[in-house]
Every structure is written in C-alpha cells, then in structure tokens.
Image (tube, rainbow, N blue to C red):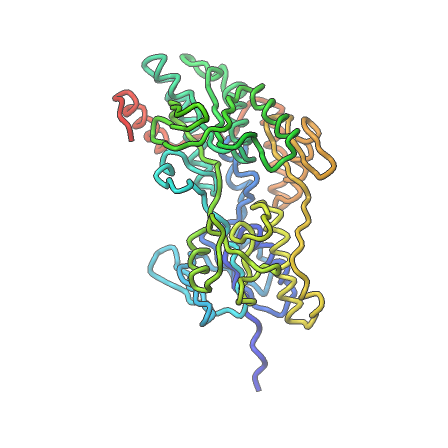
Length: 445
C-alpha cells in the first residue's frame, strides 16, 4: 500500500518573496521546487552600491543553492518560466541553453517573479538609460559612470568634456535619489586628484522627475530635507520635469514652461516598475485583473481571484496600494508559506486570516552620513537616519560573511575616499569610446 503523495509547491522567483515563502515551508509536509532565471538571490536595496563602486556583486547577491542548502524538502531549478497551465496545474521552465524544458506539476503555485523597469511606453529609452534591477544592470551603470570620467579626460575640447561630465538620473524615488547622491560623492570626493586634464568636481548631476518633490512616499518635511541635502552636495534637482525623449547624447523633458533639452552622455533610469511577462501570462491564463502597470490584483489572502492555489507576491502583485518594497515581499512570503502549511495541517482558523502588512517605515540614504528615516511618528534625518539605514540593511543581508565584508567595505568607502570596486572592463571602455566618436561626429541615435 502506497502512502499519500506529498503536497507539491512550486515557487517562481528567488527574490525576497520567494525565499521567505520557501523558508516558511521548511518544516511543512510539502515538496518545494524553487525556479529562478539566475542562480542567485539579490539583496536589491544595496544594488545601487554595486553601481557606485562601493560593494562587489558577491556582497549583495548570494547563491540560491547556498541560501537553501539546509532545506531538505526543497529543490532548485535554474530556468525561465515560459508557460503556465492553471487548469492542468503545471509550470514549464526553459533551461538556459534554450533546448531543454521542464514541465513541473504543482498543487500550490507561488509567483514571486518581481517586476521589470518601466519606461512608460518608451522602451526605446532602455539602451541609453539602463535601470537598476539586476547585477548586470549595476555593472553596466558602474562602467558608464566611471567610464564617463575616463572619456572626459580624453575630450578634445571644453564642450565635449562638459558633455561627458553631465549625468542624468531619471526618477526621484529612493533609487534615483541614492544613485544621484552617489555620483555626486564620486565626482566631488572620490575622484578629485586622480586625473590630470579634467577636474571631476566640474561634473553636473541632474535629477529629473515629473513629481513635485523627491521621495514622494515620505513625509513632506523629510522630502524637503533630502532635496536640500542633494542640492548641497552638488545635485541639480529638476522637479515637474517629465522626460519625453532620450537618445545616446541627449534627454528631452517637458516642464510647465515648455520643452527643455539636456546634453548628457550618461543616463540612469529609476522612474518606475511594471509587471513582468510572466504576470501578463498568468493574468491571461486565469482571467485575473491587473493594475495599470501590469501587476496582478490579488485577493486579501494574496491569491489570484478564483484560484486559491495560486499566490502572487511582492512587486508582481497589487493589493491596497501597498508599495513595491522589500518588506512587503518578505512579509508576504512568510504569510503565503505559513498559510499553505496551516491549510495542510488543519489549522483552519489561522489559515483563514487575510494578509496584514505591518509598515516598518521608509528609509533612504541620500549621501555619506545623511539619510532620512520615516518611521511613523519618528522622523529622522542626518547621521542618525544614516546609522539606522545601515543597521537595518546589514540586519536583513544574507549570511555572516556578507554582513562582515559589507561593513568593512563601508568603513573603507565612507571613512576614506576610495572605491574598491571602480574597475571597468575593456568592453565597457570600447563602448564609451565609440560613443565619444559619435559625439564628436555630431551623430544622434
């Protein structure tokens, strides 16, 4: 006589939502399959520091297999989900070689595939203004930022030098503010004295957003303090500026006074996110509604309407205007995992509770020794906020080794003036040089 088959849980995505859901199922009577299109989990709140040359990729990313190695009921599959069949309850994952596909049956499905960078209908901007959602993005931006100073050193005249030393960051949320602040730190504190023909302090860092204040999800007084700090460290903050055009050499934006143009070789996009292709396929397969950016509108228990066996977490889901931040994904992952376990163990009362998000507050690091912390009734700015920001992020960072090395990197970067990860590749140098040649020829993309 054979025993009853164990409940099968398939989790798509190894971000915060996926990993915390998997951990919540560690002792449950289930077999878990975790699928991700890379072999690593990214600590996304610190990925901008990879782009800024403070941290290495290995300090903000951890191998998924290392993260789950002690979880005996879990198997990891490296692949991209290409098909979902809610009726047959299967997921198809394509391997990296494009030749082999795995059809994985499930009893419960958790979709925690995150979100993609949104260019608000202008995907043609992407090659010229990368977002910051992956390790590859961070390394690309690092190459563009540090490469711009190298090209400025080679500039034939003052106009070309100014063009290279102008950086445009689109988006006034935490990522845009943190990235703009770091470029200002690089230009005014890290690089001076390292070049012979150019003064990095001549760099212009322009932060553009259509909103009326930076960090609009924070208390307005904190937003004002953050803006003053940005201006104090050399960031040109332009609000009410909606970007409508962008190519290899320029940014066009619209203000209340009309159209404006900015000559900038280096552009970074941090203006919003949208649902993934997987979310769109899930919505089409289940008939689930989506919000205006393509995220699944879920039930209060984080399931797809009409499909209690499918959970959607983090940036892939939309519920009660919850922000797309790490804490929503972490708490949602824990909730989904525990809810599945309670269903299987008969803890009906506990399984029936809707998801309740506990808002622990918002944090944003503006510059060295200055961050803002919006913690409900407690609102802080300056060194205290900066210490809280770093303490919270170290706490949630995976692994003692990463925590230790990150603390050491911070000490070197913030107490000294160097950036240990300022290396750019020969391929990135070649790309920057090709752009320099185009600029000299006056070409437009």
